Image (cartoon, rainbow, N blue to C red; front, side, top):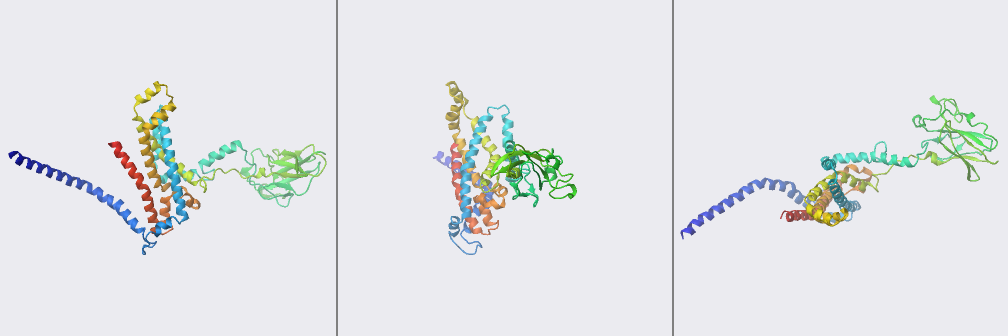
Length: 446
């Protein structure tokens, strides 16, 4: 009986202590709960309620805004783009992260390499968007990617000699801008002609261009046709149009053709003074033609931010930012793999490829899954890169759900009812992935 009386106060004391601990825990947790309620729970409930009203928020429309989502072509395009992002970006990032994590284990400066790859994570999406908006510029003089593409292209394919040149009207040549140009009248062997062009800026003239002269093409011979192709513009604007004047330069490197009966009978290239000569011609009437290849516009590179490539281009910017994150997480998982399993496989004669496919990847499966799902959640919410990189004319082609929600609500649509409905759909898509990740974290912690 005495033991019972002694045990009761002790049990009461333990219960009081537990209640004090719970109250203390509530005191510490309460600020976080209030903050969570103010920043998460209340906005979610408010957005859901707002999604049930019209654009002005005055009339209850029920599920009409949700029905409008599947009827609006722009919103459906945003859903399609979001699906592309979810499939492509996390898959590429997880694969790149795995590949780089394995490779960095085999290099001497692994820490420095990881640091360089992880640095883009320190750059905000706003700054990254501006960087890649400039890098993707169509003008090769401004966009670094197109500068590289144009440099490689021009290394294999010569650019046109005079893309801006055009024939002086009314002085022997006919043809539209961009060529080809042909003489309006025929010429026979033994004759010569002067072909004047304008539209070539002084700084675009070849460095080896010399002064043009009619004498260079005069008296070509009885079986030849001669001529000169020149810039019909004398310094200071002096001179007579259609005639070679002192100070006017020849246009070297021009391809010139002698055409007879619709066929090219001879081809020549103008010299440093713009002169050319067709030798060994049979008697007859010829038309002199300058092919359009002389006047082709220069190659401008790839239209990265055009409708066809804008989404892949933005995904490329996203990969630049997040590859380091995936590599570091996967690298941490790789470091935890038991080395004895790998050494045993090598001693049994397994190749590095077999070890990677049958040991490393299966052991890393939990880490790869967490990285993939985390990236899926992040990709569903991507906004900054899409909004900043995509130019206005192709913004609709690049929109994802987050940008579409903002544009509908605040970016000119002024329909916060539909925008709230889109936000609820986005939330419903993100929540399952978040629950999956939390459960996996708990299982791994257990």
